[in-house]
Image (cartoon, rainbow, N blue to C red):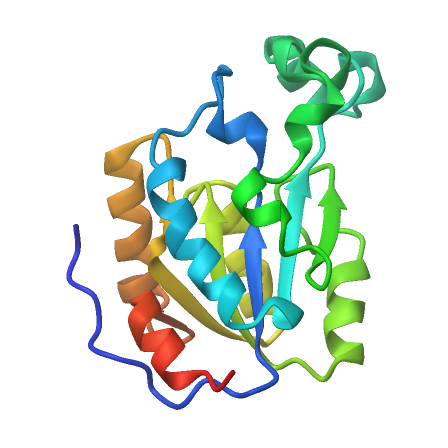
Length: 204
């Protein structure tokens, strides 16, 4: 694993939001998209949720009912992954992992049909209404939906804090490469630190 920068640049502001990406049953359980690391990082993610449940936002990736419901390049994608559509998999699998669902409410849940949670503007609008300037990012998968979340947050001007030990991927090399990308290529705009550092610097 790449070396992580030592510590945060500044204290975590009290009005920061923990943005937890796609920690859902469809990625945690026995499906073609199972991510083995999820069970390992879930308690770490839960520790951040437990610290400030009222400042936690979950995203959920919602498949179409069938491939014909998808648009453009998403249609052949869902033809390939038809087993993961709602019609085949079942709606229960898009729910949050049980160890995290207990935090909502007060945590808020935003659903999305694509990798990025920013595509329709609802999440950004909600965060701006709460005067949020900093995001603590956790979740699945670090090299797909987390990547889209992080880069969108950077584009929108948020201070982005990555909890390095609260992220997972289904491919170890891609996981390590993504951490290195965040800490080196985007090191000016993304802080990649441990959950312990975050909790110590974020007042409950």
